[in-house]
Length: 628
Image 1 (cartoon, rainbow, N blue to C red):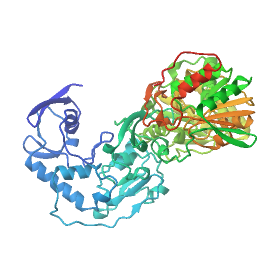
Image 2 (cartoon, one colour; image 1 turned 90 degrees about the vertical axis):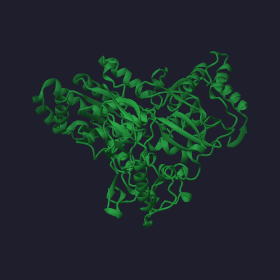
Image 3 (tube, rainbow, N blue to C red; image 1 turned 90 degrees about the horizontal axis):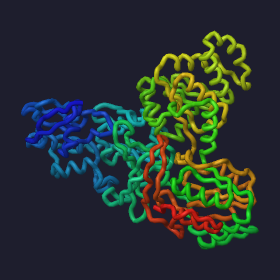
Image 4 (cartoon, one colour; image 1 turned 180 degrees about the horizontal axis):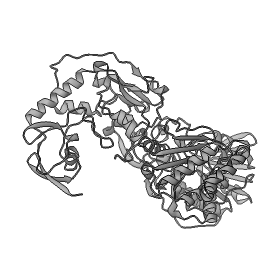
């Protein structure tokens, strides 16, 4: 795209055609005040603070003015300054802005502008409206008293998250941001992603768990990667005096929006689990505490004297820790597995059997927003992969056809064009779709005769035909497979369908770190002599609990007390997510950095060094791993 040259405040600059004057000025470090504009959102031209003088004549908002050859722009004239002062005064007088009592004091865009334009008295009388504070949500406080009606939160919920929970209601001085049809935020369709809160320029939307813990400039900032799921969202982690203050998204653009989900933004702040600081050993109903070295010796002794050992790791750990744990367990002859690896093994087996090439698999999940059709198997991704779910909602809102197939409920019910709630015949449903595509639509007659008895539940011919027609009529289809689908036959028929129709696939598993695709895993003994569980920060895993219950002796390594650690015979402390350095692999196959945000607490300083020494006890040394 060709560049356009124009003048701003006496300086010649160039910008790409199609950009706005505001965007061009930001690229050239020319400051223009704003309240409603945000880089992740479409421009609304609501606040009017970004007005500029154009060619010495008109005054117009720069966020809505496209660059043109030869434009002469003034951004800082006395006329503009008076105009902006008046707007700021009018904004401030309409609500109850008491900075000294506000959580955003010192970190507020409105406050910054009031200082910049030296507003210390008011020409217009204050209105002092009576707005109630909504604290019904688990994580977010909504205070209309501090709202400036910029519309950022509404647009973020719509354009970035695709949820349309927020809107404007009322008229004139009664105008306010409403939730759904006027319900409290805690009773709404809110997905708890916190995106509205992140884009809010004032203290109108606040994080309950971060209130008055410190402004951003008082905190240490660490850029890292979220390990809540395989999307691998980039994060800004704010800490103060060794404690978490807040977590925000960092990929701010009109595609990802910089969004996070509830687990990535809020869960680490509310996780009140008791920290495990010492090794706990249980024997004959008695419990004793050991030092870390004593715990290592005990674990090495038990592993060294056992034949059937099952080692099972969380899928939310770094590549380096998974690698070190795997090597240590192999040194002791254990069978090794990781959360999510079972599904990947099934998938690999099925692809090999049907000779399916990797070219069918999407390596950029934002592609779902470009698809003509999306066929979604297992709508639990609404909870397991919320950011991908937001992309699907956005696509559906813009006209992409969405068919969902789920065992119990359709979590995308308000975005689906067709919702098929069906349990055991998922496999048969997809097989019949394949049959109709291969044999022609005449085969629907045979389908009508047998459909009522498949799996004891009804498969409707019209459902089959709707999927067939959808896939045949479009040129760009994407099939999304949620992580709850783990049986080989369902995977086989879905992959065969993708191969037959030339559709692309996004296949999800329960592991956050897709390094599991590079690890050698083979499953574990179901009733081992010893089970060694390396738990992460993810929620309780049923497979882990089952292994601990079935083992003669169980070792659990975890950072916090849980049902899992309560059942274990030997509990070894580990680091928390924010105390680790390393890397992770996201769903797109991209390696991302996981940075240490807080110094480790307790005796454990490096899990990698711990596993190296554990392997060394078996007489096996693989050389020092990078202990970042």
